[in-house]
Length: 124
Image (tube, rainbow, N blue to C red; front, side, top):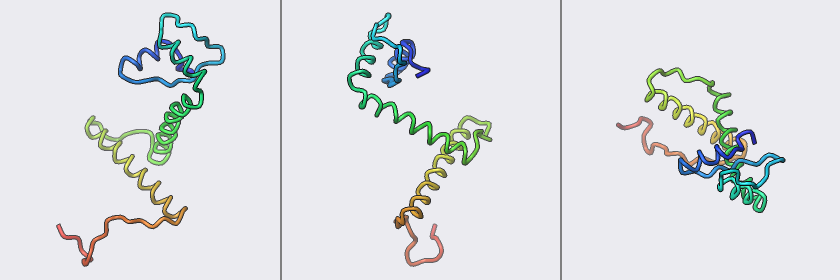
């Protein structure tokens, strides 16, 4: 709710998004120069479940980011921007693999990963 402001709603709209930020308890639907504030406030009040469903997508992303940081550290070692992107993507892939492996063992799921056929050595 700390991000709930008319300015933030307008900034998100200007880059093509829709901000689903819950309103503070003392917020009102007065436009105060932002028609978007009034529109989203009424949507928040009248469609709370749908609004919060959108908002909780953010909390899922935040939880995943926190889990990746806990598992692989908060910093990137690479200096080059392209290498930093690749390092971050590698962390995401590695995290997703750990989640898949955990679910396989936790829920007894059989994997159907690609397996080499009729050969003990890979052919290149």
